[in-house]
Length: 171
Ligand code: KMT
Ligand code: NI
Image (cartoon, rainbow, N blue to C red; front, side, top):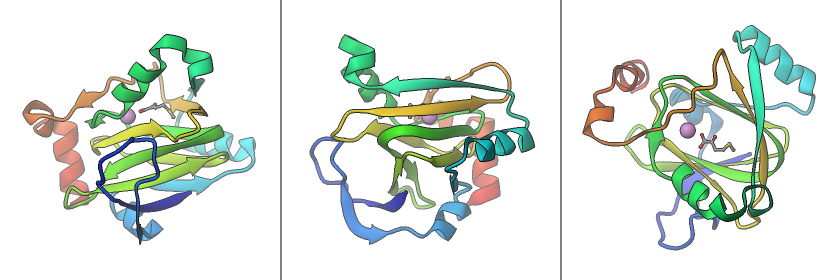
């Protein structure tokens, strides 16, 4: 894992966009973002149990697996959104970037690779992209039914109760 301020330069979303300014783990925690490196799947199982996560699935984001819809998918993952539940991702193979909004609405880029687990709190604005190698395999953990509904940023979503609760707790 490596976290840094996004450089906002134009160009492919899959480039690293590293401004050279690192972001500390303590800052991520202030946003409610939790990172763990968990080389043992038993540690993932324990975390899931502790948080009451009963279900999981695996997704491979790559042209090989997704075929013609790959580019479209990668674009849709990269539109800024939030969820009404926390989002837990555990990287099984490959690499990718999660971008999260800082307290003052700048992008923090979080590079994830194998064995990295990331928890995004409900209500945080974020987006995802593969990197230039176009391959990531991730486990998605969920408490009950899979509910990945992305709520794209806009006035309605800004006033969503989960967004408001996030701002109350974190900002
Ligand atoms: C998300 O929420 O954008 C995703 O689940 C992307 C695929 S998981 C690496
Ligand atoms: Ni998401």
